[in-house]
Length: 285
Image (cartoon, rainbow, N blue to C red; front, side):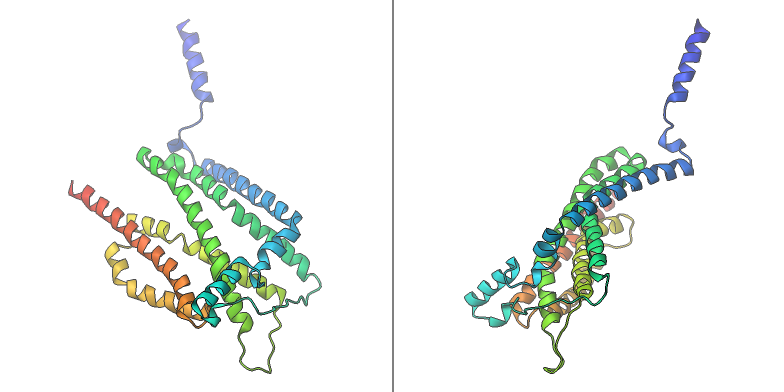
């Protein structure tokens, strides 16, 4: 009887999953493969949705920032009228895009669909990556890391929206209307336009992850709030130069770009200070 009970317990233990600490390298690799598979599947599903809705994706989203009726362009023109600053009004380029490759439009359609799938699936991808590292976290780290996925997704989304509604229209207006000579006309290719929109949008989305990056760099001791404060002036110069390049030659449009970016940097300093002070207090105890 006792032997039978013992055998049942042993069988039960064999069927139980191995603790995370006992997982081998290949077990971890298998778990990572599953998370990556689900992430890629989510990207592909959203990419297919974007591919099917081609007219909406291109006419209402991708190509919209070059049109005078785009939301940002209309708001800036109203602001220009209110402030009597004509240079602030943009969107009157009448930019005509051209395709010079036989498969150019189809490949652009595929590229934008995949990019839209990636952008839309970012929150889910971050959640899957969090689920992968979750077993290795301490109980208190698990508690705070849940909010990290939400904050990361929110910051990236805000960055994409900030780029799309402000940086992209200003960039298109600047480069689309820039001339080295009146005898040289701008004939913008479709691939060049798409590359500009995609690279600017995705890059700014990543830049908005700066507070998260600073949080982890402060945790591991790579940066300190003192270091960030010391280099604030260099960051300000970099932001002002960037805004001066992509915006019309007036102070109002430069402020529209510079203030949010510097606010992001100040938020990063505040986060770094909190993490640093907490670590100092723990060490003192």
